[in-house]
Image (cartoon, rainbow, N blue to C red; front, side, top):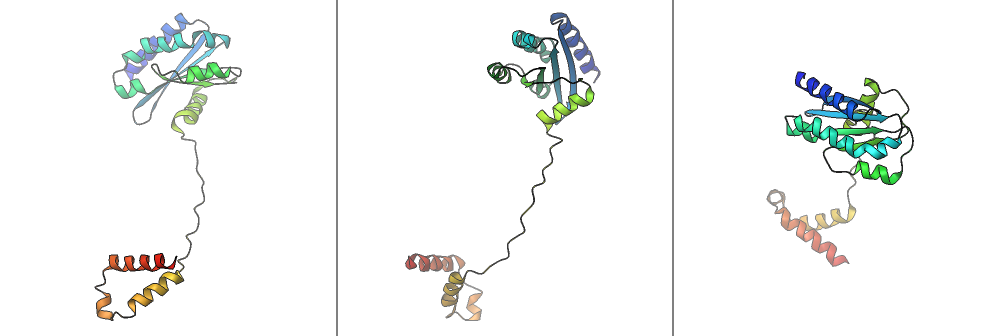
Length: 185
């Protein structure tokens, strides 16, 4: 944990120097291993359009390359918080960029970014921990004997005495039933 805090604080310091108009917050959760989330917000939304790649590269260079485990390195999420609706093409480019981290754009975000809000965003986009599934299970349907199959079975078994019924070859019996139904058509 101490190593993470040192690394995080150093990365935040560098990012603030490189991108003075940005607010950068890190949050880390345990989810099968450590997952780091980085939240980036600009005073002017236009700066996201101009700087998102540079920010992604800077996070990769000054934070991600310093992480010790592969799990942590490959489970880094970068959230860009936009006050307005973003142009679809730009949002698509950001979120589908395969370099270094998973990137997610949160549009029309005009709230304070506190710990609770970060955890809510993480829940909605990564862990789905707030997801509740209330799918009603259908009641089991009662067994209904098929009259056609019963008739075929009764016909086949009519000539078999009780001692031989225990030694019936069920594969052979099923084949006889299948032939009986094929012959009907």
